Amino acid sequence: MAQADVATPGSKDASTRDGRHTALVDQIGVFARAGAEDDIARLLDLMLDGVGVALAGRSSHAARSAETVFEASHTAWDAAWLHGIRMHTLDFDDTHERSLCHTATALLPGLLALGRDHGRSGRELLDAYDIGIRFVDFAADCGRALNAAGAHSTAILGALSAAAACGWLLTHDTEATADAVELAALQAAGLGVAFGSDGKSLQAARAAEIGVRSALFAAGGLSAPRGAAFGDRGVFALWLGRDAPASVPWGDDCAGAAARVAIKPYPSCFLTHSTIDAALELRRSLDLRHAGDVRMLHVEVHPLAEAIADKTVLGSENAKFSLRFCALAALVDGRVNVDTFSPEAQRRLTEDAGSFDAWVAKFAVRTAAAGPQLTARVEVSTADGRERRITVEAPRGSGSHPLTRDDVIAKFRDDAARDYGDEAVQRLLDEVMAVPSARDIRELGSLMSACAPDRGAPDVHAWSANGKRS
Image (cartoon, rainbow, N blue to C red; front, top):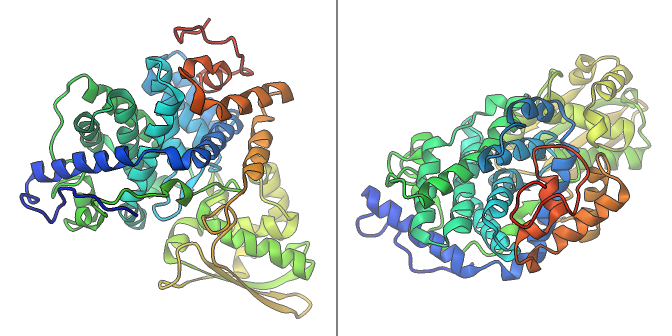
């Protein structure tokens, strides 16, 4: 990773709010100069995945409820918020591995809404997307610490990153973009207590809304505070302590950040995925088909996985944050998909186990503080006396085991097919792949339609040249 000369918290005048703000301005300049050229293919994969999971989420309870609030609004910020709720509601959207920030939900809805309203090119959109992802990577340790502290990294770090991306898309100015980040820090909020409820998608998606508003405010000349993001009394210092701003790699261009964003193969908390992979392998190798085939199952995970993803009571959205339920689904069905978390599937799977309480009783979770964040070590004892241990260092979809372009397209087709026919799916796929060469993203009618508040199959003629609904 390249280092640049940047005013950092360790440099002269760093103790002042202006010093921290100057460092932020310089850091955005580092990201902008790095450019997205080397990561275009990966950014397109991430965009395609984000659009697909948003389509799959349109019929969810959270999205339908949100539509009753947002449907009449045509503002960019409300469009971003609603689109973000759709994108996050299934917990099938991407995850930056270290920070656990859902970058697609935080960044894409706002960029698409602002790009449409302001007639930006596809390459401008991708450059801004790249800056947002680099910002997440830059403050990743703060994001991880926020989750450990009981906050929500997507809601807080995601909001600042969205402001960086949207600010750059609107202004191409480092000062104005830094102002947008400072303004976002005043609004960013999110609590881990929301995990397992519709409130999680609401606050994750609000990161996109905050990014849009903050960028527009900054572009409009609204005075921004100094140090709201990285100052001694800024959002990171207040949540994590005054040393937190010094923990970020000032001057680093965070090269390859997009490759550190995982595309999920399963619609559940990313911290459950290594356990799912292990359970699928145990099912295959030991020919397990029912909960009764298991006498005892021990899982060792990182403390953060135990804190966030070890729900022992089902209901609402808890199953997506339950190592135990996800392992049960993998063992019994041999798959974990969107339908796994329907009330009917939850009922069927828990009946197979006798009850969820009965399954929980023979499923022990231990923690390994020194282990990698994504690793799961699983040990099973079967009802017929066999034993097997398996370790998954990192799950499918992660940086060390990434999904291929074909995998991403297959996931997209499956997600989009929930709402659209084959022809519409192909048209939308083609338009996402055409983003780098689009002179004005409003020309991409299918993509613009898919991101709009109203439902319906994407229509290449749905948007006129000025971006208004025809």
